[in-house]
Length: 419
Image (cartoon, rainbow, N blue to C red):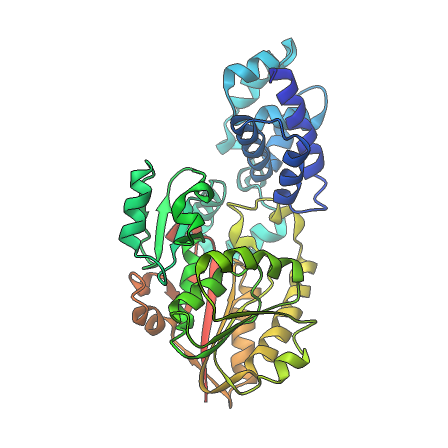
C-alpha cells in the first residue's frame, strides 16, 4: 500500500474511534472487515497507532496544536507505530519539519495532566489511594499488556503446552502466580496453533485466572459463574471441577453466551450449562437458592483495570457511570448470595482500580449480611490454590492486583463463606 493511503486510513480510523460511542476494539475490528485487503503489517500499524493515541491523547492533542491540517492526521503522525521511512514518505514538507520538533519536547517538564493522560476525576481518585505508586501505575498503563494463556488442565499439562509452543518458535514462560498460566511476549497468532484449536489453551490474563483459582470449585459440586460473559472464567472453573458436577454460566447477554459455545466445544467440557437470564432476580436463579456450593460474581464494572488493553475506557467512563455501576454491583451481589448453601463460598470480583467498586462494595456487603456471611482472608484461598506467593497479592484480606506490581490487569476480589 502507498504510504499516503496508509496514513489516510490511520486518520479515518482515528476519526471513528475518537467519537467514543463504541468500544475501540469493536471499531477497529469493523474497520478491518471493511478493508479486507490490508496485510498483517498494515493492520498492526493501524491498530497500534490508534491505541497509542488513546493512551496519550491529552499529550498528543496538546502537541498537535502547533500543527496544520486535520487534527486526527496530526494525532496519527504523533502516535505512528509503523515503519518510520514509510511515514516520512507520506508527510508533506511542513510535517517533515514539524514532527521532529514536537517529538523533541520534554514531556517531563509539562503539567501533570499531560504526563498521566488520565481524566482529572480518575487521576484524583487514583492519586488519593496510591500516593507515590500513582506514577509507576501510570507508566504501566501506558504500556501494552503481555499475552497470557491459561492451560486447560482438563486436557493438557503446562509443561507440555510450553514445549509445543517452543517447537513453533514461541517463548512462553510460566506465570509467576497462576499455576495454570503461560506468558508470551509479543503477539503471535496463537489462535492458529494446534494447542489452541485442540482446546489445550485459552487466552486469559493471569489475574483473571486467579479469580477462578480462589473460587476453588471442586469435583461434583454445584457452581455458578453469575456474570459469565464469553466464559473465560467459566471454562477455568469447569476444568478445575474435572468436568464433573454442574456449572451454570449465567449472563443477561445472549450474544456473549453465544461466544462461549465454540470455546466450550474446544475445551472438552460437558458440565457447563449456559443460561441467559433477564436480570439478577430471574426466576431461574430463584429456583437454585440455597443449593449452590460456589458462586463467582465477576461483576459488570468500569473496566479501568484493563487500560493497557482498552485505553479508550478512561475516556468513556465518568463519575456518574461509576455510581450507576455501584448500584448494579450491589444488586447483583445480593442476588447471587442467595444461591449459596451453608458452607458455600462467594467470590465478588471486578477488573476495576477504584475503591468505590471494590472495597466499598465488599465492605458494605459484609456489614449488611453479617449474620449470614463470614469474610474469608484471600491469602488462605490463594495458598490452597498454590498461587505463587499470596502475600504479594492480598491487601487487607482482599485480592488486589495492579499492572505495575504484578504485570497483570488490575483486579479485585473478596471472598465470603455462608454460615
